[in-house]
Image 1: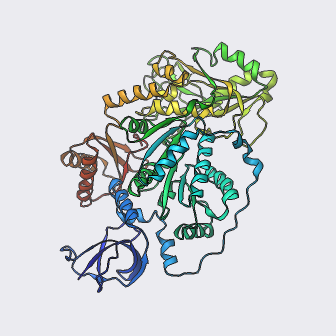
Image 2: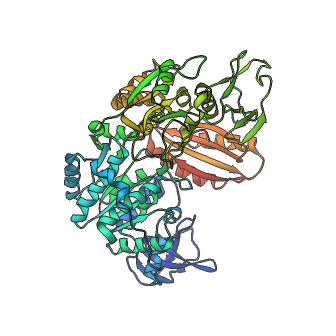
Image 3: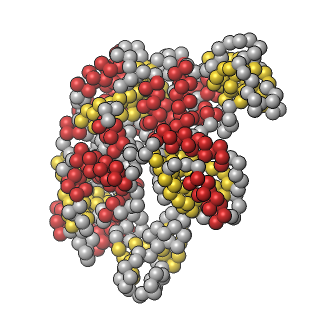
Length: 626
């Protein structure tokens, strides 16, 4: 008698059932009993030996039809293994429930109404010309019917958008399916409107904010192969396309591709694997490709197409941050000269500043997490943004009792105050930047973390003060992220404009690469550092997050640490704790990436037998400290 292993889209291990007829049901949707209810599930595998650990095997109640191809099933299995998640958790991320409802013949939802686009909103794209050699190489790879990886270094995000439009046009003429993935919903909607006007009902979009009626209609079109162009955010990698000929990932370095909830998959890496399994080319593009992707170029996993210099870029000037003033004299001169043409002044943090004791040299820090506390001058409070703690500003140093405490660094409040003091007769010129306002005259102030993408350069000049803040963040990707912030900001500055960066260490080799847009020099420098310190791409990191159920931190810390060290060959970093969230976490690191993944699968089985916590796993963690 054949037995069938079935996954239900819940956080459960696969279940075993029997079916009287000997049929190949792998990839089929079925209804099965579980306890006192019936659930729809997916058949993963077939066998003829009864599993020893299962006593009573129940029968599959109903077979609905094929849901996924063999290739897509292989993709789901890889996602499950690589991200250390039960396949039911992966299945829950897909459009399985919608497909099952179609197979059951349920009434389709009301046809979605989609507002037509306004042509004048994207006329500026007409002035962007794409390197024809790019499209020729991609079409050549696509026609071969084999996997091929490309990394395209684009000059601007609009160039990436135009590339997607061009490839969609080429593939539409060949009557094949293309998957276009972008990190942000607003960009998906923008591109969708453009392509929908051109190709009509053959274009669909997939993201979390569309109405259920449109989602159902989009999935139906994909299943029936009426949708030739699929545009979406990260979860679009699970689109049930049967004839994919090309996958394009815009802004491939964006951490928005990392899912926020467990399982925390990375859509970029998932898209590459799906292309490999389904034998179609995958294009990664970005204005600042990730160090990991450049490493894959050096390993010949991707072909690099460097188009960054096809368009001009603003000049980057590196200036020494004055000790007593906020602004360098050259910056002050340019602020006076160009304030009517629009200047963007960027501060690295919120609040007024940090506070430092002149006697011991220590920055006032949060007692719980050790982060520097932000000083808010307007209400004389110290705030820890991580722990959400607010305290009255002390008159003496909490470290040594010294009385000489002074501001250090520049927050957005301090930047605003200083500018208004300098331009006291024209305070109306100094205001916070509003992304939705067309009035860009004067000096507009912005906090770096709140910078948003703009399609058209708007400013003549930009200023980043206290840039050392970005380089001092305790993260092995600090320099990569800092470089990326400047490139992101450069898209807001006109090509004939200037970006001034103030730093206390202008001789840092980092600025040599930054001022000349020397990406390759920077990548090689960064790879050398990461190889020496054993960080990705030369090692894999896996984060184990334990949510405590009881107040037994010390005992569990020791037990978990000893268990991990005795059952893994990886480096075990931690334990690190966050008492506010009732969490402790460890980071496992190993040069042998495949072995680490296999070991953690075994570790998870052993941890299931321990009590007092729940566990989450993150492969390639975004944040190493929280």
